[in-house]
Length: 383
Image (cartoon, rainbow, N blue to C red):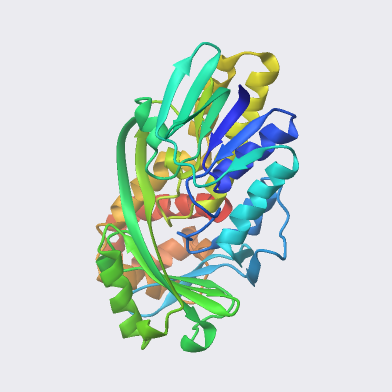
């Protein structure tokens, strides 16, 4: 009987395990991959705030390059700044291992190559099964990725909407970087609410696309338009990203769902590392409190707190669904007004001048106002 079993050794699972092991509870981490973090399924960017707000300090073992923020590029090539918050291009595999190794250092056990395929409630907790092996635990944190196997098995998942992402990693000398210090996000009708990207990463560059689209075809087209030869790629990275999940609950007595399994990835930009760290830390803290108080019901409080977090703000889904209807013409108009500026330049005076020149934009005034609020959320919480 373990105090806690954490399923999944990504950022969410690693953070949950850290909270539990640090608090002195016997913790078992089960990971289906042979090597934690491999293969990578991530564009590999995270803000400094995303790390520090979760008690993590940048470490040279997984930082590839400091980043000065991000720019949004509209179809005609003009751009504006969407954040100046500093962050990092990271080695995601090394990052995941570093997090879970912190839990192991505090006493957690790690089992890799272990695919969980069953869960059932038992007196005093749960029984977890992987093939012919079984483990009993007083509490369980499910951080088992976007398929959310455990949450589905317990009937917590009502619906899931996912998007696909596809990426090439190029050597740095294969890409003519428009901005070597920032992440670039290219929007357009073709990406259906998603985007293509160019992310500098030290000696490499990640180039890809994602959305409700054929991500592979979009990435190939994006590369060709920029004179990038896919044959020069060093690695192909592909994966599924949660877009909008509807769960009956994120936490029930003795059980919590975190990270991609909970669908907390930001629908505005697909960012999942910071939400994973946050939700995993929170799930681990609630589990530790439940164990300390010997009251499994405490973990139901995780549901309430996560729902109140910025990561699940309905505004994010509202605005991205509106953006999915925007034409390239409208995106170019917005980009033209903001070209070279920060989105924070949008104030009443700026809006009044813009409407006088282009009165047709008043039709989208509600969307623009909500977009400003959504960008403010994303700047602090979304990457």
